[in-house]
View 1 (tube, rainbow, N blue to C red):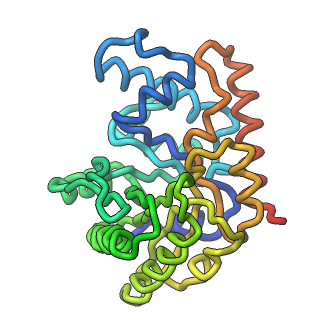
View 2 (cartoon, rainbow, N blue to C red):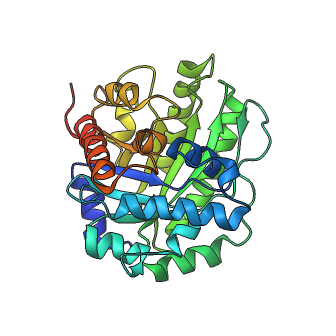
Length: 298
């Protein structure tokens, strides 16, 4: 059973979810933006140490608290690390008031029918058991849709909800993330197919079970409002998907009931060479901007 106080925060509180879950494939790019070149480290161990240091700097900044950041999605190695002298999930919830989530997918399979499902996760039950013991509230898993192909979109949604039911069985709340590429020439049509498929799966969930949805900001404002209002949905969050923070926040401000779950848009102004005061001030401005777009709609 999901923690009741964490669930209350996720369903009823203004704010947004920070995505601090770049994995092996996306970590070098995140470090480059931060000001750490590929030549500055040697091997995966050093890479993950550097990105963990960056994440700890974010999580321990004064502005990173449950007042505006109501949740944070962690990479597995981040979950297993420490911040403020504690295990990261405990530090986030006990010291910062931020609900911890865990990214669980192992990357994407090759594109088929205009979409990429997730690679197999044969050790998922063991990972979920470990997440529960660590104090994790929920999970996140990402698929990608490149075009408006009904077969491909149906395959993505079917896999997402099959895994969601497995996650719910461990007492965790899944964030279902079928990302529609912002570069798709048929983005609007893909969103229509996706919404229909998601509603079909939501309607089939047992009474009382709730999932969260993480979706690309739609081409039409409030297009996902039927999902926001669905009884089986705890929260709908938006991914920035490659939009700049300014563009993502502007689009988000027109989508009622959706809050942010940004990754690159959260960290795009942060640099390793900043003083602590500069870093904290920059992050504070960013958190304020994303919070405003999540909480105040036009």
